[in-house]
Image 1 (spheres, one colour):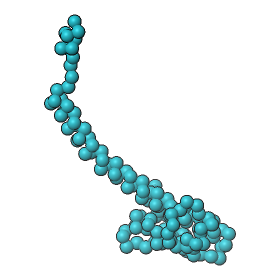
Image 2 (cartoon, helix red, strand yellow):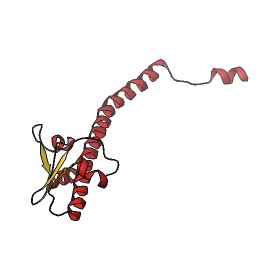
Image 3 (tube, one colour):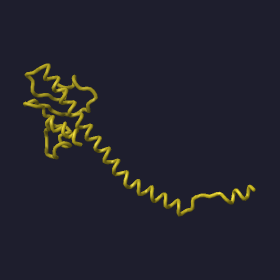
Image 4 (cartoon, helix red, strand yellow):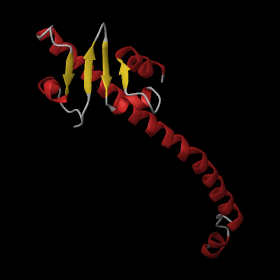
Length: 127
């Protein structure tokens, strides 16, 4: 009886195993680039969100000192927490713009040096 049970065991043939491996390979080839794009978009949005956070800090600084229209990383340091170190400038002129920040090249083109708050928000909302 035991010998008969051992002979009736079924398993995968080599061809079936190869077919499964090929299907998994095709799925992986499609999924990996998509995941890479999702990660890149997340990094871009995080950088743009950081620029918006910097502009929000400039708004608070301007509320405390309305005659000041120009801010940099040193003057905004007391208003910011957990923002990457780096150089940037924020200017108020009928609206806030940030320059010398990574978000400028993400939202604008490679030659853009400054970007407005509205453009940053539009990027987050539309992307």
